[in-house]
Image (cartoon, rainbow, N blue to C red; front, side, top):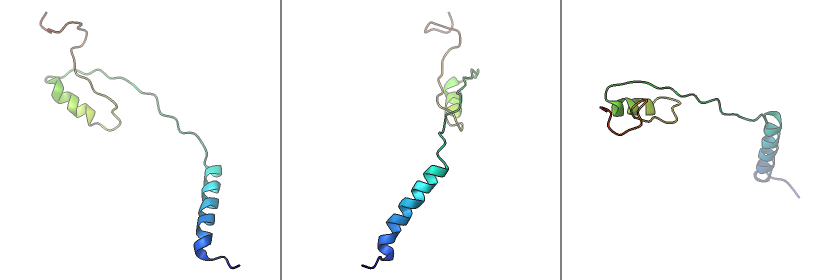
Length: 73
């Protein structure tokens, strides 16, 4: 029985994958996340800028230090 290149390719690929995994099998860990509080005029406009920043996970608008709905109280 003769082995063709068509039959050898999957075996070669499997060997390459196993060798690659055994040489580079370190775990990847996510970095620590941080929180930033900023002040801005129209905070919905500022929120969209921060949402599109590279690495941003979340941006949330609101009134800092207030627990009620009306900011003028």
